[in-house]
Amino acid sequence: MLGCASLFQFACNNKVANYITFRNPLQGESFHAGKPVKVELDVPEKTEVQNIRYLIDGKPFAEKGTKEFVWLDTQHLPLGYRMLTAIVKTGNQIDTITNNIILTTDKKPQKLKYTLVNTFPHDTSSYTQGLSFVDGKLLESTGRKGFSQLRWVDLATGKALSAVPLKPEYFGEGSVKVGNKIIVLTWQENVGLVYDAASLKEITTFPYQSSAEGWGLTYDGKQLLRSDGSNRIWKMNAQNYKEEGFIEVYDHKGPVERLNELEYIDGKLYANVYGSNKIVVVDLKTGLVEAELDLSKLVPKNYFKTEEEIGNNVLNGIAYDESNKRLFVTGKKWPQLFEIKLGQK
Image (cartoon, rainbow, N blue to C red):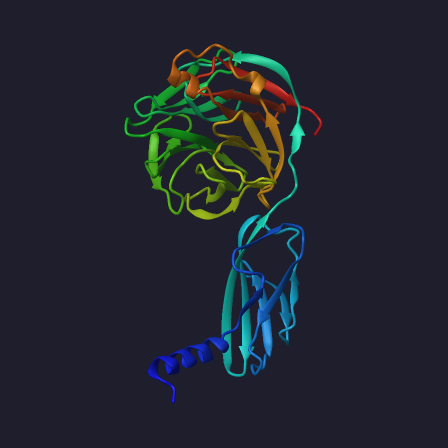
C-alpha cells in the first residue's frame, strides 16, 4: 500500500507527464542570428495532436498537423531576447506554450576610417549631451544639474546664438528638433521636456515609461529613437512621446552597453559608446553593429588638468548636415568640434 507521500508524488509525476513543453530549444538558449533553430515539442505519447501553430514574437512562422519539429529562420529577426510560442490543439483543448531564446551575432563590425576635414571652436563650458545640425546651425543640449542648457550655436564661432537654462533640478541629456518643437531628455529625473524651437520656451513635459533613464535622442523621420544607457534603443511616438518598443544592440562580443548620444544618418543609427572614443553604426531592423569608428586621435591631449576633468574627457556628440553631407563630432567640454569624412569600410 502506498503512503500519502508516495500517492502525492505519484499524482504529481502523472500530472507532469501530461504537460506539453519545448524539447528544443532550451529556455534562454543562445543562437547566432542567421542560422536556423530547430523547434520541437515534447508531447506525451497518448496525446493526439490536431494542430500546432508556431510564433516568434507573436508572428506565425510555421504550422503542423503533427508534433514533428519545424525550423525557425532567424535571418532577419532582431537580436536579443525573442519569445517563441506554440499553440497546440489536442481534442477540445488548446494549450499555449512559451519559451525565450536569445539571438546574438558572430559578425565582427567593419572598421571605418576617417579623414579630418575641418576644425571649429567649441564652448568649453558645454558638457555636451545632445548635438544635431539644423538649418545651418548647431542644436546643443548640455548636462549637469544647475548648469544644463539648451542652445542654438553658431558653427563657425562656437558661440551660442540663443540659450535657455534647464530647471536646476534637471540634468540635461539628448535633444532633437521635430517640426517646430525641440524634445530634450533628462537623465534620472524620469521626464522629457518639450520646447518651442524658435523661442526656446518650455511648452510641456512628458513622463518616461518602461525605460528608467534618458541618454541620447534622435529622429528617423517617423519615430524618436532614445538610448537609456543600456544596449536598448527605444522607439517613441513623435507626437505623444509614448514608447512603442525597442531594439537591442549587439556586436560579436555581446550586448553593446552604455549607448549614449545618437544621430540618424542615411537609414542607420550612429551612437557614441559612453566611456570610450568609439562610435558604432547600428542596423535599426536587427540591432546589429555593422561598423565602428575609433576617434581616439581627436581626444584633446594635455588639455584637461583636474582629475574630474580628465575623467570626463569623453567623446560625446554627433551631428550630421544632411544637405551638404557633413559629419561633426565633439566631446564633453572639448575645446574643438571636428568635421570628419568617413572613408571606405
